Length: 73
Image (cartoon, rainbow, N blue to C red; front, side):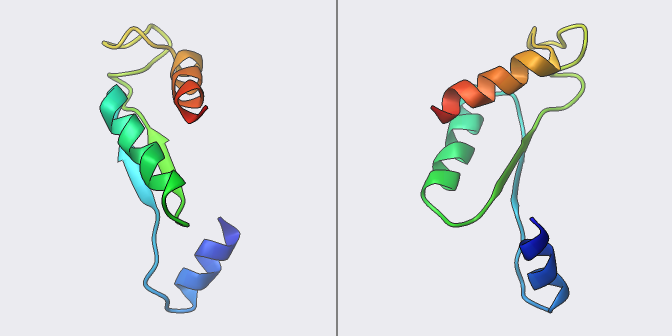
């Protein structure tokens, strides 16, 4: 990440793929992008989707992490 920031500060037009979703197909697509490119991917969910009470997806932050990690395998 530090290299990416340094390249950006040096004037290179570079960024990161950022996805904010808890939908399985969106997560799968983001991970496919990561596997098929040299770019980094940031995956997050909104506090309505995932929170300490389960959000509307029924997932806590730990559940969401495991959900994404499981898709990575």
